[in-house]
Length: 195
Image 1 (spheres, rainbow, N blue to C red):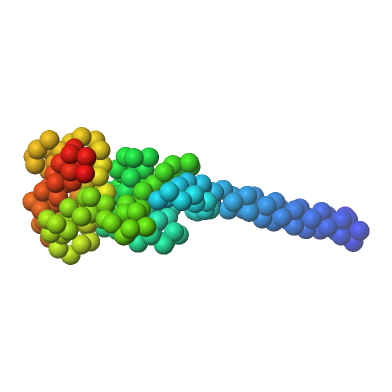
Image 2: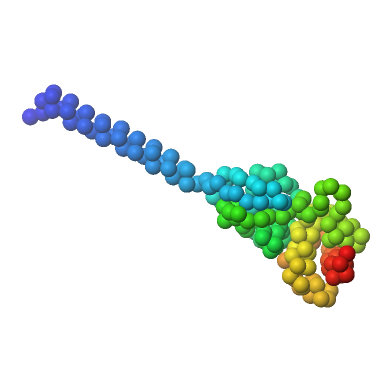
């Protein structure tokens, strides 16, 4: 027989269990939410940067949306066009395919970080792009320049054919490829001459 006292005791235990369950779920949910964001410290264009980002944030989105560096362009967002090319620890990478949280202590250089601020001089490859008129709409130009710097540093500038091969991951919808190849070759030649 169920008495009022037994009913109250059973109901109190059940309600207590439900409340404890909700509290535990809230704590677990808060811990899970904390694990979706990570603090990352790196250098961008020579400046130390510390940010906390969603674990899914690409380097491209970190640069454009969190650090206000819009020079790196979002083209295909799938690693196929090269518009988002930057240098990470001296190597060219597609920033749309690179997770920001994987870059702890890395050094990132974007097109904004190429020219020295004090004398407004362009980087030699930037100047070569201007001299060779190696752009039309300009959308792909930052990625082309960053990839060109990587190509020069890697030593892949022995001939126009070699430059074309090693720059083939960067697309130009305007078709400025011959001038881009000339610009990269010109900058490479200046570097070999010590200019």
